Image 1: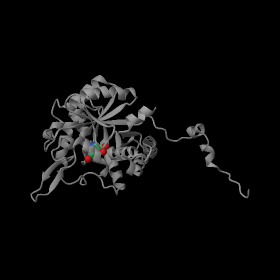
Image 2 (image 1 turned 45 degrees about the vertical axis):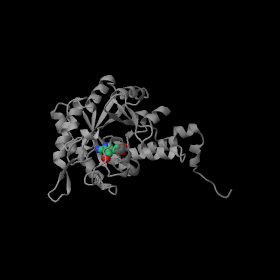
Image 3 (image 1 turned 30 degrees about the vertical axis):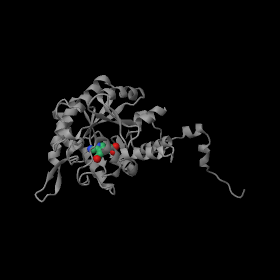
Image 4 (image 1 turned 120 degrees about the vertical axis):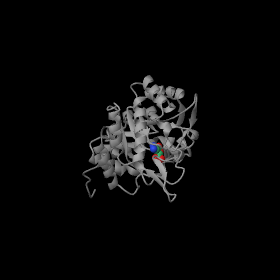
Length: 330
Ligand code: PBG
């Protein structure tokens, strides 16, 4: 042989044992928050058409499903409500009215599964007749504006109602300015200093939310969300959002979606010393499911590969519809 290869990286790939001991990133069921959908009524289990394996449950069936989920070792869920169109209005008043099925679900879940960490969504869209995350006002010239500060008041009432129902963490997902500070002050003043805030810090105006909006019937009735959600082209802006949320008291900073934004996950993880969460959103789930159903790729391997990439990029917490499927592999 004319040459000598001194460093041979393949030595560390020779056997499953060697590969296992040098593995840098290992997923655990402890990494996950499992997003789930609750709907009114009884004995309802309806699959989301664009999210095979993901269901909307009425509370009775959700409580049963949570026995399975918690037995699998999943420690946290993020609960989203699916409201009928007729209960929506301009001010999302159903989001903080006492005794709604969503608030009832939160308190029943915490009563039955006190160990389970329950996170909520704070945004107007599931309850808004306009399908927007903020209050929509029509300007004299007929154009529409999403009102920032007026929205905060509604989000504040929603947060207190959810805290009162037993939420461990609220997840403001609306991208209004100043919301983390406003909600922190509001929760503290209402006597809930222990309720945490997982802020949707860098939430992009993404095409990957499509299946989620199907699940909740929450697509905007007009326009898009680009005046509040971030431009996918920007990363420095994510640092500004993160600095604000951090200063305003967010307990975790979230990047959403995850896969097209792995650089943003790394950026926030490199610059902030609170846990970074990443939301592996509905469209990212649907892509893999659809391809797997067509026999175009191995769904389980693709799932593990993308989840690993999210953790490798720097996410400590992963919100994923794959959480249950992942837990079932162990
Ligand atoms: C809305 C909200 C959205 C998601 C979580 N909260 C959708 C949106 O902003 O339109 C998306 C989650 C997913 O796609 O899985 N406040």
